[in-house]
Image 1 (cartoon, rainbow, N blue to C red):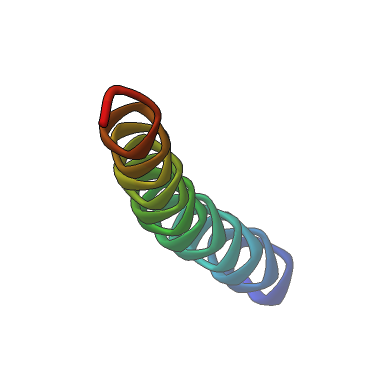
Image 2: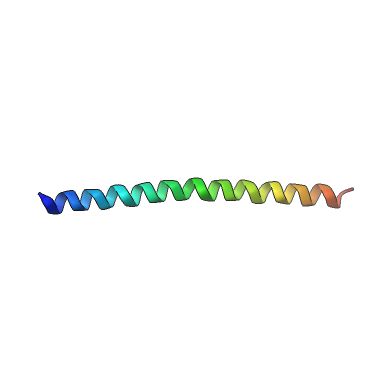
Length: 45
């Protein structure tokens, strides 16, 4: 029983880490996209 609870805890911990990582990378991608748009806009002036 204890071994099962430990496995469940680690699966939930890993899942939470992966989900928060996805949000971080998505936000990072949006920041890079905005930076690229700003550079492109400045270069076209």
